[in-house]
Image (cartoon, rainbow, N blue to C red; front, side):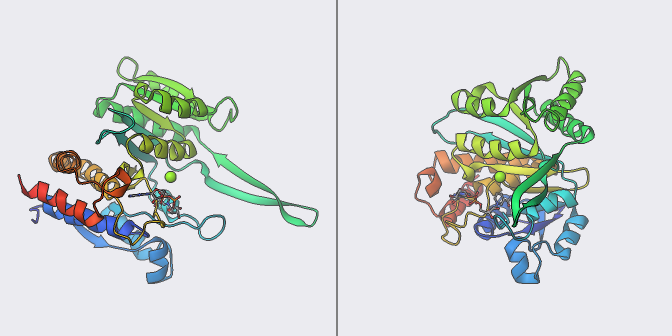
Length: 343
Ligand code: NAI
Ligand code: MG
């Protein structure tokens, strides 16, 4: 089905399970009749293979032009090697807000989870200004990392979270920090959030929690949380944790939002352990594409897509292996397409 008013967006298939989950998503979006036309570009290891660069200039130019992208996961070497293309993309387009919802779609260990995590996406320890200090004959005797949060960037992400709460009917934001130990680095984040919260008094509540206590509370009583507002590193960690509350990384979408561009992706990585086997769960990037539809004002299509996914999971009982089902990526994809065409 083609849409009367197409919207061109960059499509990055990515690495590992990226291409197979992205292919599934495109097939389903076509069955839905989404407005997106795709400008396919490479990045990550696929970028190195195709163009000798993990973040090729033509990929950046495409995003600059369309200001909208759907991106598969990109592999980043551990320890040494090139810098994360994911982090570089967020920096290049100043995508300061990372929105990561976790919502129960299937019965599991926890029922009725509905948490939206907002992560500051550019600062904190992710600036990764790191160096070694030599001692004696060991040039790498001491490793040092510097983190950075500015008052302005902390207020900007806090304001984003409060505005998101208003627009989406959310009642409470819990600011997550470690201001008892990292008194300045995460203290400035907490102070800025408190300041911004005053503007929203009576409309959106705010409280705060130290990150380690928050990690435990998320397991003991996750229902007490509505929205979490986190610094970059804590947001990274806790977004995998809340994905675990709703069935795992196969169920976790994310949006990287800035003033001039937005990139939608799964929370998970390239999953090298299952890549190429045709068993990956495509729901994370599929739900990210639903967020992308919301972003361009196509809430009706986004809701239809989300309903087709939950009906496929719960009425048709078609589920991939990570959800204790037996379906392959392709079988799940075909089942969602069938749902969409049966209306
Ligand atoms: P991962 O998220 O790729 O995988 C963790 C575990 O979850 C694995 O057992 C994997 O099989 C499983 N898993 C993840 N997504 C799944 C899905 N859709 N269906 C079924 N099972 C799924 O994390 P890992 O292994 O730590 O990282 C692999 C690579 O991905 C690294 O190079 C890392 O830097 C990169 N990465 C990229 C991200 C991005 O592009 N935004 C985010 C996180 C990691
Ligand atoms: Mg992560």
